[in-house]
Length: 151
Image (cartoon, rainbow, N blue to C red; front, side):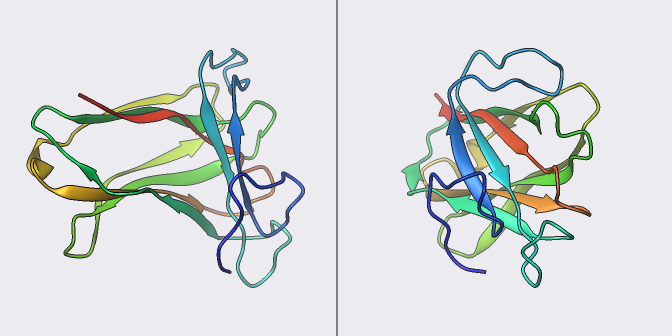
């Protein structure tokens, strides 16, 4: 459906991303750290009625040996019908590749990611965080909690 503002507004029925300082997680606990809330859209019906995606592409970073991508992923508190696929993708100049994908539902837990980036050592890499709605996107308030490259 095109580019969205970042940050957006949680009232935008074409999808949005918000920067949250300390969101409440599906576990009921506060995250205690920064998170990105993403809400995918459904391209042919912007009413949260079905499948859609939202992604953010970041400026290239030079990966060094021992670098890891770390984050937690899950759903925002109150989104009981949240059901999404998280993807970590990258482009090192030869097309987009997927480093991992994880299905997350509102199950009172969050998943911790720790992805070894050693295979990309010495490359300038653009990372892409993507969320895909698996079904009705009405409460797909997907959280990337403190996504970062750690040296």
